[in-house]
Amino acid sequence: MSVEQLYQEIILDHYREKHHAGLREPFASEVHHVNPSCGDEVTLRVQLTGDRIADVSYEGEGCSISQASTSVMTDLVIGRDVAHSMALFEEFRHMMEGQGQVEPDEDRLEDGIAFAGVAQFPARVKCAMLGWSALRDALARAGADLSASQTRSDNDQSV
Image (cartoon, rainbow, N blue to C red; front, side, top):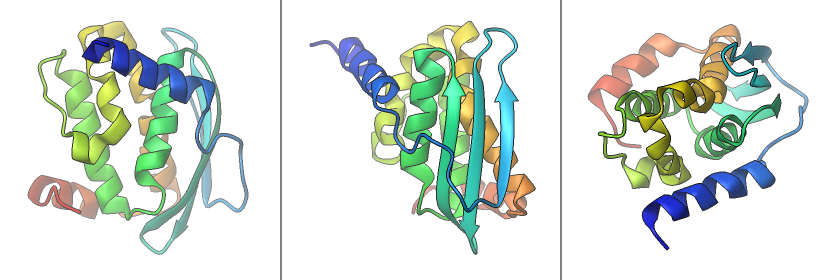
């Protein structure tokens, strides 16, 4: 099996069996994001405990890329602090904007590396970023300090 086939399989697995799907309570904030270029949608809720992401739940409609990326994102951020999660957001965004030229860190992005090939298709980058952008918006609306997370992501890529 080629790396591309393996990545396609990871995306399809997350699309078929969406992790943390279904809107749950309690939640600190809820956002609804739409990708107007293709019609993908996600409603996402976040619950914080201090500076930790206690839960992320969502409902979405759209392509396998947007739905799988949101599933992967929830696995990566639930139970983590906001600063770490926003550092992952920046790493994922950097990979997606790299047009397939950025080598992702598998230890940090885990199944998220499956989207490295998607970065070669600019029309699909917005699909992959939809859930991640909704998370950042939901965290801001929940009162999370995103400025501190940017400082940490710039200076400390470790957990």
